[in-house]
Length: 123
Image (cartoon, rainbow, N blue to C red):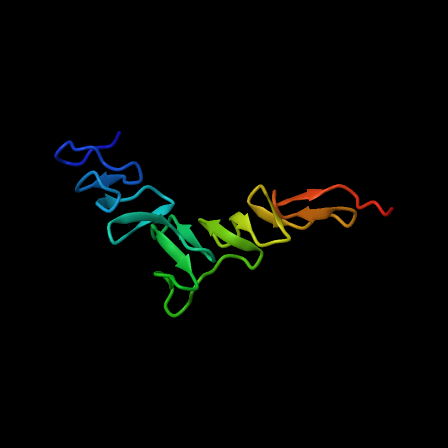
């Protein structure tokens, strides 16, 4: 259990806090970022940058590069660290070792599990 400087228990989502509520965070663990006292994951289409300790993507301009925004690779729904390190994929892609892959020709996409199934059989 984490505590603040006064040894009060912090909410489980906070790395450091000013009180025990989830809205009283003062510092977050990666890959979450602080927004109005709340630790939140980066929104879809952006990724957590360990270089800047912030979200980067179309709504979060890159801090180190002027007038350039970074976004997740087009196959990624979410990413972390770099634009190509996917943590979730856009259908009909599935996640394998940080990459979004397509099903093989003889397979079909199963949206409920975000995986590929076996061969389609005609009756």
